[in-house]
Image (cartoon, rainbow, N blue to C red; front, top):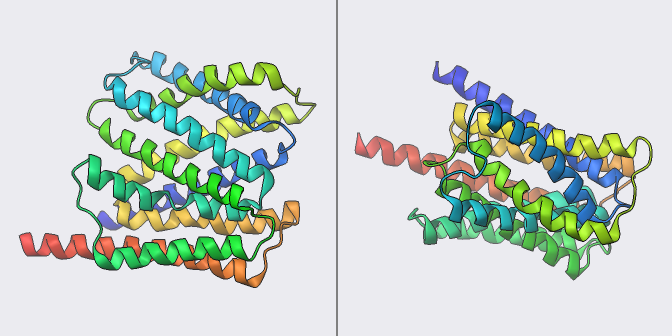
Amino acid sequence: MMQTKATAGIAWMISAAVLFTAANLCVKSLAHLPTEELVFLRSVTSLILAGSWLLWKGKSLLGVNRKWLLIRGIFGTIGLATFFHTIRFIPLASATVIQYLSPIFTVLLAARFDGQRGMRPVQWIFFGLAFLGVLMVKGFDPRISWLYLGLGITSAICAAVAYLATMKCRDTDHPVGVVIWFHLVAVPVTGTWTAFTWVPPVGHEWLLALAVGVLSILAQVAMTHALHRGEANVVMPFKYLGAILAFVFGLLLFDERLNAYALAGMILVIASLITNTLYKRHRSKKTGALES
């Protein structure tokens, strides 16, 4: 039974990685549109879908823990905008890997604001190696300036704050109610900005814009199911399949080639984060065995 549950969780996480990659490929295809417009179009679609579901279920759109829901919305908006901006101007695989630093910042913030245990010395080594890998990706790829590296890290930090806010709301608000606050903030903010910079999508670009919102919502649902049906330490490593997919499709669809050193940096980032996840799983099992 436990094995079946774990397998289901892994399958959902792989589905989430595929869906997120597909959404990001759509964003890459619309790279000629302003960043704020991409965020707005994505958020409007997701807001309609998530809002309709909450109303259908008779749940409040504004939720309960509104302080942390607002924080979730603000930092989620900033994180998505900076991530979309990096996707537009640097290789998709590189943007994805830099954004994968968010678990590091999530651990640090959770220790400070959520009462969770801080990192052990060996975990600092894993995370140091992950940062080294990101620097290798930047250092050996002239397309990645310090500006875009900074925006990518900013996106990772904002995503970590958004994850922390989500944890703060886990006992008070429905997951969809937490997600919708991102759109409640993003739509008016980016909509106002877009009013002055609007570039009309043409033809099939409207379908791509719609797909970004639909695929993102489906990916978030899949990730939620993954974390509900399997232990986080088991399913989270499969999230990093997204970096491999981003590299493969970035190469096939956009001819985004990476040299051997940049690829080695990507592998170092993914290997460090997966090793840290497996280490946490080992520690939790060991602690549980001692307690029993």
